[in-house]
Length: 353
Ligand code: KG4
Ligand code: ZN
Image 1 (cartoon, protein in one colour):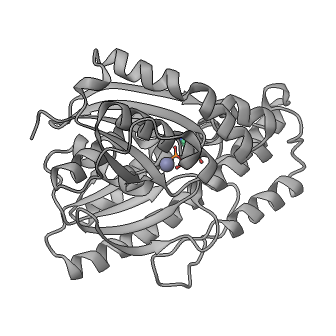
Image 2 (cartoon, rainbow, N blue to C red; image 1 turned 45 degrees about the vertical axis):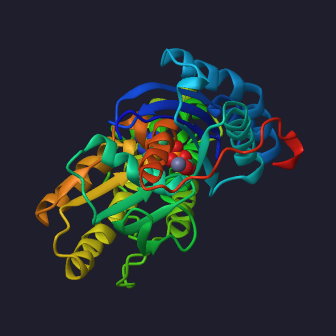
């Protein structure tokens, strides 16, 4: 029922996150500790380093989540934790913490799929969002078009054959010498606003493939070549670039973004047509995952969705990027249907997980 209170823990990638959510969808607390700073310094995620960063902050992040919710572990109904997909070293930090709490306080556990959580958090935001619905999940590691028939019942309509869109945003941002401390995506989105999106005619990926799959590796190569041919001095940080150089970089950013998103638009358009043939009752397209916090992405997809007579549901940015709320909420959805695990043994040794 609505008196459920679930703690959600997320450590699958580079954010350490925890949140407490009620069965009625009320978010009691939300804490995220980001490693973006670390990544900017070292130029990418090294699993061992990411694991260490998670380990350093996990206790504090969970404690803060409980504190902000004004609760102790004893008030919880269950602990939900991301069990995949993701870096296994990193996932283990979250799972260990979850099992420790659940064991000590005799709480049920729910193992959560990271991408399912990205999709289902939309049902916390939009209470009218019933199954079946369509979901486009766009993040650093995944690019998925999914038909959600019911809880735990998903048909994959499309996935990436190489890179995800977030990866392309991050690489492009790095190559353009942008400040990566807040993440490449947001920095690129901002710079793109200054540029002319029509200035470089990148070709749209997989035009000739009439399916719902994605590809971003080719677009990345096109960007790389454009940077070389425009003689952008991208090794100089953008903050020290000349006016002319900055404007060239902005043109590349805007042109990249236009085509990256056109690819999404085309695939969504087709997915909606397919999905309506199988399930004519579909009313919503959910767009979630880190890249869904991008305003240009939201605006363009909203137009496609409206043209098809559907409605877009896009969670607020803090719930699109990795967070504990989506994990807690997905835990609640499964828990309600009896899909949870019994408490682990108390005082389980750390190395058994
Ligand atoms: O879902 P998420 O937080 O983590 C993964 O599961 O991967 O997504 C992270 C990705 C990164 O590639 C990041 O650059 C991208 O989402 N991202 C954005 C924006 N905010 C985050 N991409 C484009 N525009 C944004 N505003
Ligand atoms: Zn994610």
